[in-house]
Image (cartoon, rainbow, N blue to C red):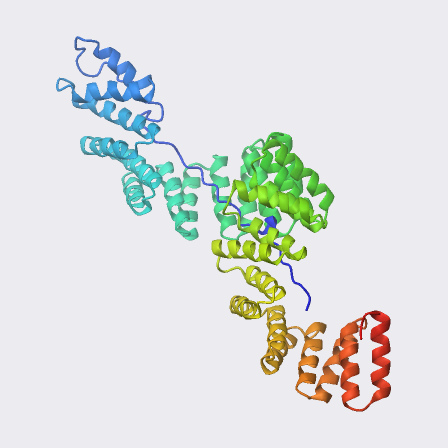
Amino acid sequence: MSLIRRPLSASHALRAVILQLLALLALGTMAHPAVAQDVGANHEGGHDGYREQCNSSAPAVAITACSKIIEDKREDAEGRVIALQNRGFYYQQQGDLDHSIADYTTVLKLSGGRAARAKIYQNLGLLYFQKGDAATALDNYNQAVQLDPKLTSAYINRASVFMKRDDIEHAIADLDRAILLNPKDSELYISRGSVHAHGGDQDRAIADFSKSIALNPKNVLAWRDRGLAYRAKGDPAKAAADAKEAIRLDPSMAGAYLDLGLSLQAAGDTKGALIEFEKAIQLDPRDSQALKARGDSYLAAGDRDRAIADFSQAIAIDERLTGAYMNRGVAYLAQSDWNRAIADFSSALALDRNQFAGYLNRGQAFGANHDRERAIADFTQAIRLQPGAGEAYRQRAFFRQQSGDNVGAIDDYNQAVALNPNDAEAFRGRGYARLGRHEIDPAVEDLTAAITLNPNDALALRFRSSAYAAKKDLKRANIDRAAARQLDPTAR
């Protein structure tokens, strides 16, 4: 049996979708609260002071001042609406979304213009989205674009709701509308490019990021995101070039060094990648992805202790970092620390039950720890996830054979050989299982195939020697035994 250690590479991680969510829109200038200019009576007692505080003070002071205006029955409707929208803005700043929603809902009842109402619905959509109520947010965005089909922000924010639902088609459609309304906005192309990349269409993503760069060559995010798309497409050279440009534009961007390192790693430059990961960690010591990537480099170089240290630190920062558990488990597996390996693979699988490599690796660890039943169960799960993976059949066959189930082992070896006719270990295993069933000629045939594929397989030579001996062909048995001992002096 050969150990199969499948680390998860950071270069294969799903890239994050970046949508440009807008802040609350104004009924005029809501993002910077509107100033009530000679609205309502100039009542005694400092009402002008309340107006000033309602528009430009710290949230707590502003909320109090706005409330005074709202509660003043002598104030006219327009002044009350401005105070309500400002108070709603400050409640949102404080994180008091329910009171913010209540104020905007009241404003909605008092406002008559289509454009003004559209902005209110847009603001309510954003607030509900912040609350995690995507359905109500979507309803409000729908109302906003129905009232004002040119309200770009509503399309952008509605696209965010669609992305939360993994509805790529509708998210792209909304961003298409936003770009038609604002074709010179470089940020919109980044948003649409990010959605394309998330949907796996790297060519369209690259086109959008390139358009953003053409509109604004200093937009570091566009360079970085295009590099990510190039790497996802399998072009590490272009990915590295874009990451370098992002670093030139912003030398303090830790993530760009991580991107450059991952691109160099994908190109086979492990040493160069390690240098970039070091820079990323120096700039941001709590970047769990950079720590995990550096751990991957150490693991590839055979420095398991440093790899384990980095994976452990990454997990301490982000306990849901599946790849760090997986690769730390791989390092423990290589150190024959079966219990720690099993614990890490189990943690990774608890976070994602559909990891083929997790079951394959944990099955190896269970088997090495003499728990054949659990090993077989894990290989069975691996086969369920990837029925075309011959190695999972081969591994399950090995432990079935160890358990005395030669018939089941031969069935699995048959699958392994059918999926990969060059799998020398599968031929060797099937030959040994057939030898155990006294099927001597088929055993010799399989072991000969294994030796043809790997002439240095001392174990296959030793098994074939036993098969020849069973056929009373002592000359060939002795030749194979001698060849096995020459390759492995410890062979009996």
